[in-house]
Length: 183
Image (cartoon, rainbow, N blue to C red; front, side, top):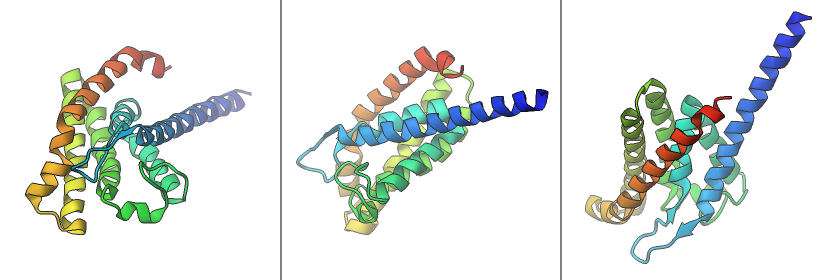
């Protein structure tokens, strides 16, 4: 009897964790649809990074799973990306940022897992954001023949202030909800 109860408990924990992963996948997709287009850049402002930051804080090492699910569902044809869907969307100007989301979640999740203070969490999210920027800029330079200066001016500078605010808001939400989330 004891073995059956233990199995049910483990099963419920597993289901709960899967639901959390899918929740963040759908929140990232929702964030892609909340967008603002700027006339001077092919990269729109979205809330995706906000939900990426939240997933890193709440899911830690599993944040890459939620982002991986988001990407797989988007390339499978679901309208999860900002301006389209399907495998070819990854080759658009925003494709480098999407790949950067996954790499940032891998690195950021590991950093947050080792963090003990909110200043460490903040630094982990800043590093995660820099990874996203680096992948996006590299993609614009290699895939779209932008100069490094031009890629930085259209792919990083317009987003720095907003992304800093997203990090601060994500940390505030994390601070308010983490104890409830862990239950």
